[in-house]
Image 1: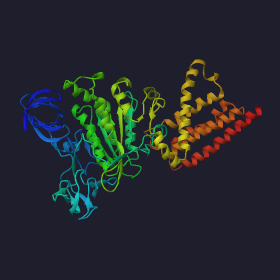
Image 2 (image 1 turned 45 degrees about the horizontal axis):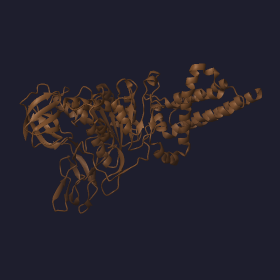
Image 3 (image 1 turned 90 degrees about the vertical axis):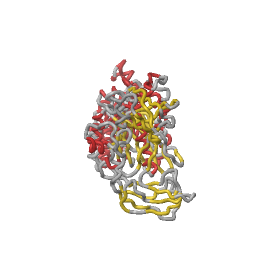
Image 4 (image 1 turned 60 degrees about the vertical axis):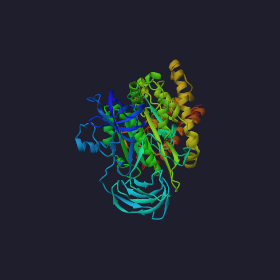
Amino acid sequence: MSGKVVKVSGPLVVATGLADANMSDVVRVGPQRLIGEILNMKGDSASIQVYEETSGLGPGAVVETTGAPMSVELGPGMIEGIYDGIQRPLEKIVEKVGANISRGVEVAALDHDKKWDFTPTVKAGDKVVGGDIIGTVPETPSVLHKIMVPPNVSGTVKEIKSGAFTVLETVAVLEAEDGREVPLTMMQKWPVRVGRPYAHKYPPARPLCTGQRIIDTMFPIAKGGTAAVPGPFGSGKTVVQHQLAKWSDVDIVVYIGCGERGNEMTDVLREFPELKDPRTGESLMKRTVLIANTSDMPVAAREASVYTGITIAEYFRDMGYDVAVIADSTSRWAEALREMSGRLEEMPGEEGYPAYLASRLAQFYERAGSVECIGSDERRGSLTAVGAVSPPGGDLSEPVSQATMRIVKVFWSLDSSLAYKRHFPAINWLNSYSLYLDTLKPWFDENFGDGFMKSRTKAMGILQSEASLNEIVQLVGKDSLSPADQLTLEVARMIREDFLQQNAFVDIDGFSSYDRQAKLLSIILDYDVLCRAAITKGASAAKLFDIPVREEIGRAKSVPAEEYEAVYAKMRADMQAQIEKIAAEGGEQA
């Protein structure tokens, strides 16, 4: 079925003669067969968002509908893949047309010619339902790809093969209840705007270990949770996102570069192959899928890229894996929504964003969760969604930040004043929050005793006390404070500089395990307890702040992982001896 173009306005094309088409159908526009998607219908007139540059396209050009919604190909070959916003493999396009990508190029998302070793896990005669695993493919050394029955298919296995097959070859045949034979391949297609089904969604109860101390200890995120990283230009959003992608204890990472600078995606492409996954020892790319739709690429495809990324993530979640989706940034995605909304002549909402901005953001984040997968084997998988927000001028009162804050449960607020002081990660501990603390407390208590959460609460109390004391210091000076208040300021400085500050570019400090975080924080808090006891005995605060072990605590985070337990134990003993000596001297003078 085909129609004719009557209007072209940037990425928006209006065509008539498409009365039998449906909303969200994919179409091919013009002689170059540009790919597009129908946004709305009025009679036989369709408004189409074209995912490629439309210059040179004019009225009268032919529009052909494919009769299918925007979908992704799901199967072996996605890991290590680098796709654009509508799942076209950029490396294959470069091989086909060179570095300057031409318009209308058609390349399959998965390699249809490559053969994969398929090992069946069911046999003829077995009954299977949607979501059941019928076989496995060793896709990379880090990922065992599980071939599943499509969600809407069930029946009895009539025939199943083993050996090397392409993703389009039949590996099994099911006999449905009505007697039909249903051939199964290793590839599924799924519409990106429809969430994949699951059996049951659970409250997230396990933390996602990121190796970043301010996140794991102060503002933890749960596996299957949602988080936002808002911050002004230059505050370190992208490095925080890279750290999460590198070190989070998930099985698969889907990184969506959505409207950010191209050189930031280049950094990811250069770094990830060289970095070793701490769990498997393999390259990080062996468990990563990259969606690259940077600021110089078509704006309409930017809107589709987050759906492409989260659909791929849901597919791996359905295998029973823990998956993280990292979107950088949802603000650029919202700007793409605003541009298309304006061209559609819709009534603008606040700051020109469409009135449905909040519901679209919610549709994205609410596809996260810790779920029981469909199928008969009760697999559990999780999908964690982390989105960067880039508010203009760092203004968190703008619509994208406000809508995101209403949806997500973890808010890591980046602060430009911390970034200017070279305090990274520049997450402001007074403005950030995590609503998962109560649900994660049982897990922390079980694995680390109740001391971990008590230390976290005490450290946050000290940081909040520092904020109120700083106002007094600005008026009357630090020397006029009591020794106990001076100690509060000193311990808060240790928490900030020796614990919260972390160097992403130093291997030893780039990742910090829970055990190491707990021990480092407890040493700082023990210093606080010992010094308060010494001050009550008449010890000099200045001498307590100047003990030799203070410098050792400052360097503690750079101690190699295999040595830290012995070093921390010695440091604790030295600290106790030095403080008790000063306390004894203070008592004699008194």
